[in-house]
Length: 481
Image 1 (cartoon, rainbow, N blue to C red):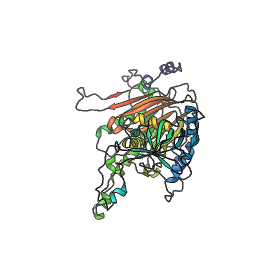
Image 2 (image 1 turned 90 degrees about the vertical axis):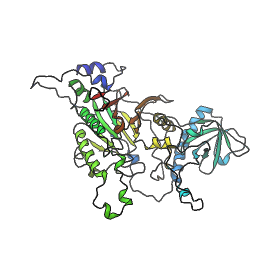
Image 3 (image 1 turned 60 degrees about the vertical axis):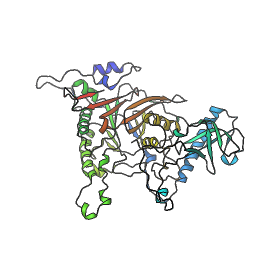
């Protein structure tokens, strides 16, 4: 414990989990030797995801109300940002007041017209006799066009805007003038940028939150199961010597960011085969949920755990996804340390505000823009001040009526997305001094990697669990930070 106090003495010192969990070579000891007990401090926690909860659900409304609410909520912010960027002397017009040749700014919602975008109307159209489009990795093409809409009208855009990088649903301000051909020539554009941020509370000790996603239970990867058990053993202090156990005690919370079940558990046979062929079969998700419960009970007996649903988990498909039902976890639910939460997720842990998703918002933008880097997309959504701009156009979501809950009213300190192809992290600063850590949490079933966030310094590092494989000449199991 002296080592830990030495590390945390200097508030400016960069301390990673690998420093705290330094091995002390105490594995070999005489029988009966007394072992110290490392206590895990209870940290303050406050869930802030109320706006993502659905009360009485009604699907009778049109999605136009959601776009109107989004524009209304964002208009004031973008007017202020455009005034700061271009000067207050530049008039901000609505499209109905636009005059040809007038140099002005407009606030509106982008719509990207894409020839390759899948459409159910195209597929069922008898006059075209079209075959269903094959799924693509990306649906962009050079012929895509950007259109700006407000409450009453729309106008085509041209000029200094990279069409392929923008997506439908983004609310922005543009500067330019309407030409005689009816198109608006864009000279510059302005985003809402980072929202206001509450300063972090100073902490006097290093405490960590572990982020993991994409456990993929019910799949075929035995290696991922071994790595997952190693992860659980590390967090619960059953792995390593005294130094590593004291480091494990500094992990104050575990957050599982969706896709706990594998895609292979999504069995479609029950809907395509005759009932008499499937009535005695059991869905693959049943056994996977039972396995998840057995793994969770090991964790919640030692540390608080937040469980988010993902694309392949048994809850509603549309965002915001509601918490997994408690009845599925008979072993884990009796523990007060288990928190079944929504996707998107928001909470304050020791004064550090976490905000994130299971990754559907980022992977959808990958399909409909030229951006491939998940970290770049995460930053762009933060600067747009919107979690899921492509909802409800290409990403399913609930038809909200009076407000858009995906707008960020307050800036998080840690902003993450799950089920990414690889681990990445980055610190981002805002115009008013906001400081945000961006993290793409890798899919554990394919990368065997989780990540740890230091609540005191907002530093992040990956923890990789490699298991036995044919390439390991020494047949050694390795846990690397």
